[in-house]
Amino acid sequence: MVIDFNRPSNGPGSSNAGRAGGVQANEQSANPVSSNQAKSSAATSGQSPDQAKDTVQLSSDAQQLQKLSDKLKDTPSIDKERVARLKQAVAEGTYIPDSARVAEKLLKLESQY
Image (cartoon, rainbow, N blue to C red; front, side, top):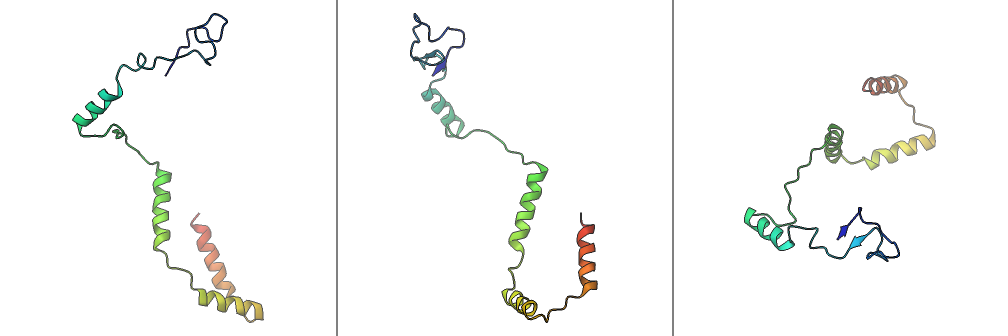
């Protein structure tokens, strides 16, 4: 498909009347390399016409995200029994958190950022 931006479009005497933006019907004139030529040149290079020599470079943020994702896969699952015991202790009012340990963990967490 060819879009001719230099030709006036949709005018009363225009040959492109009814075609938005001056679209020409002759697709072969705009594409000097036919699809058969593209397929044969790709076949001689050992690639299919859909395969291109594109490369992808991930940003450092994307690489870091990938590493974090891999780490998450390696983390152990949640100990459901321990969670159930803690929930029960909180519900019964028998859970007494160690405030020194909580403060230590908070400071350690804060120092990471």
